[in-house]
Image (cartoon, rainbow, N blue to C red; front, side, top):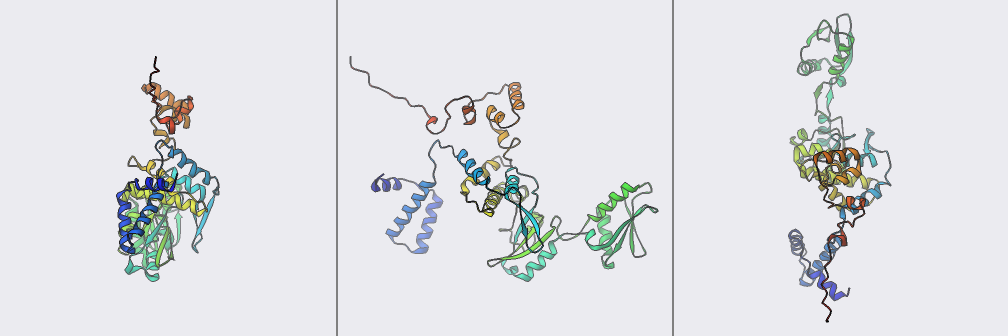
Length: 377
């Protein structure tokens, strides 16, 4: 293509309104003259043209290949030690599988908490990190034991001042138990017929009862990133954290997409899926165009709920019977389709490849009709 014809092609491209607005903003901010503005518009149009796909292009297949090929280079089992505490955070291929399988609870649920400008300092960050870590009864007592003679559970306190807190927590958390104090111990009895199993179960319940902090936050680490003091947590409770006066709710995020969808909506969950997948790839030094992951994020959330990429999610909900059967559980899909009298319209790629037809993509999208002039007799 000649330079003139290329310029003509570029000038014919209509840019989306948000890009036009961004160009206007930059022109005003940089105080560009007419020539500089035209040059900027030309460069933007070039990039926009490069970023567009042609009608009929199977960009779903391209996205799948562009993600899965680099993913083969990822480590099979990778952990990153978070801070001085040495907490293992799942990365690598296991984390990518977690994201695309849309697991309801990640193996290592984490949050990144940003603070408002007035609380953005080391002291406030450290105090908040200490306050939000969940403390259970097992963390503040000296000893807990089972007394088989009296069929009770006995608690020895580390600090006698915490005794009222412990008693209140047991009363609120476990119904039908009797609590009394004896020889600076808390004695808990359930009923006279309680055996060893029941007492052991009661002891385990008592040890796991919440005393203070935020439920679900196991640990918190303070770190500085540029001008921001951040708190990274192991465990999440996004709903509670966002209500705290010190927390910047616009930037604080959880890595649990289901939790984000419940609290902030499906669009926020889509962003979490894209960002988490992108960060996981970049952690391994893999370069991938974010638009491939954006497509996956769109497909996973397009119904308004988070679907996994698998037999019970996106792949299992395809309209084509043969495409579903080709993925997994072949007999089940074919039998179910025959019972329901379903029809396959052969509108996708996989089902047409299976029976040897031209796929409805690229040049196979349309039929050519040629009109020849009749030969003169």
